[in-house]
Length: 66
Image (cartoon, rainbow, N blue to C red):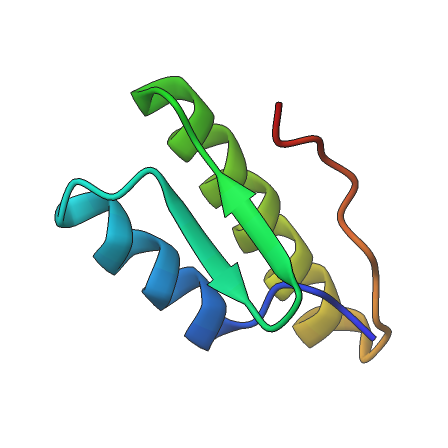
């Protein structure tokens, strides 16, 4: 099952626009410390969402939050 969904991407964007530096989804916290961190996470999420939609397959994004 893919980690990133449109809802999670929307929550990430909302947190970023409010000045937050992390978002927690259940037991996973995604942190970003700069604009480039946020943009990297957003790009990973969009790619995963697009691949899942195009292929019908789930993928798992690999990233570190530190």
